[in-house]
Each structure stands twice: as structure tokens, then as C-alpha cells.
Image (cartoon, rainbow, N blue to C red):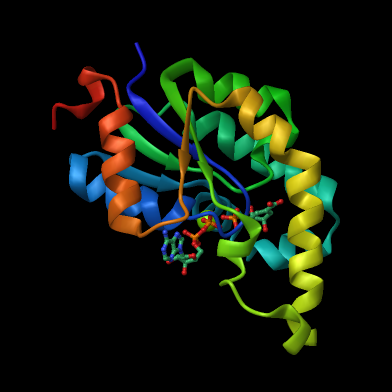
Length: 169
Ligand SMILES: Nc1ncnc2c1ncn2[C@@H]1O[C@H](COP(=O)(O)OP(=O)(O)O)[C@@H](O)[C@H]1O
Ligand SMILES: O=C(O)C1=C[C@@H](OP(=O)(O)O)[C@@H](O)[C@H](O)C1
Ligand SMILES: [Mg+2]
């Protein structure tokens, strides 16, 4: 039976924030895989990326496999967790997978990027990640929840879509 809730989605889609809010609301434990990675390695995510993306992804897989065994826990992933099929197989074992679908426009704050050249790279990078990963987020999602309105509304949307066994708290 699915006893965990796993949040996937682009960086900035709200996985960490909504994971924490949901855990308070449902009275379940909360684990953020990025935080676990930093705790496990005593290094920041940026420091780990400096050793190369593969180095980071290997640690991410190791930590994800452990975290996936949690009981009655909300698990917030890093945006790239879907890049390895094995990560998702582990998470699906006990977890209901929720894709937080937040548009690049919302993530970047609905700003006029022409007026903010320094943010242009960020938007371009996010658009690229969206194009590369959107099909993966959909492929692994049991439930897709749009997060383009308020955090409170999204929490309500998620709770409405949960099976009764996970909603009873
Ligand atoms: N629906 C929303 N309304 C307002 N701010 C949001 C919403 N969803 C996410 N955010 C904000 O976006 C930022 C990134 O969220 P975060 O939870 O760190 O995303 P992720 O873990 O997916 O990278 C945070 O400042 C968060 O409060
Ligand atoms: O999308 C990605 O590849 C990544 C997203 C980050 O997490 P968030 O999605 O919580 O920002 C973090 O795991 C790392 O920087 C890589
Ligand atoms: Mg996060």
C-alpha cells in the first residue's frame, strides 16, 4: 500500500515548501532528499555539483534509495530525481507520486525578463529543463497538481486528490 507522498517537479516548483506544509497539515513526517544529501555528505549541493553532475547524481541515487524506505512520510525530491529510472522505481514502491506542475513563468515570478538581463539565463535554463524533463514528470506521476495559484490552494488541491487512506490524518 502507498503510505508515502513523493513530490516531483522542476526546481522552484514548490516541492520543499509544499512538502513541509503538507506534513504539518496531514501530521506525517517530512524528508527533503536535498537536505538528506547535505547531511549525509557534510557538503552543500553546490559543492557536490562542483565535482561533476554524475558525482552528485550517484549520491542522489544512494540517498533516494534509503529515503524511499521511509514510512508514512512526505518526501520532497530534487528536480533531477526523474533522470534515473531506478530512483523512481524505489520511490514508487511505497510512495504515491505527485507532480507539482508550476509554469516557468510562475517560477520566475511573472517578471518582464527583457528588463532584467541577469535573470534571462535563469529563465532560459528553466525552459531547457522543462523541455528535457516535462515528459518524465508526466510519465512517473500518479497525480498531476498545478501550482500556479496560492500555496494554500495547492495544498487543498493535493489533499482533495489523495486516496482516503492518506487523507485520514
Ligand atoms: N504557489 C506558490 N505561490 C507562491 N510562492 C510559491 C508557490 N509555490 C512555490 N513558491 C515559492 O517558490 C520558491 C521555491 O520553492 P521550493 O519549495 O524551494 O521549490 P523546489 O523545492 O521545488 O525547488 C519558494 O520561495 C516558494 O515559497
Ligand atoms: O533539478 C535539478 O537537477 C536539481 C534540483 C535541486 O533541487 P530542487 O528541485 O529542490 O531545487 C537540487 O537537487 C540540485 O540542485 C539539482
Ligand atoms: Mg527543494
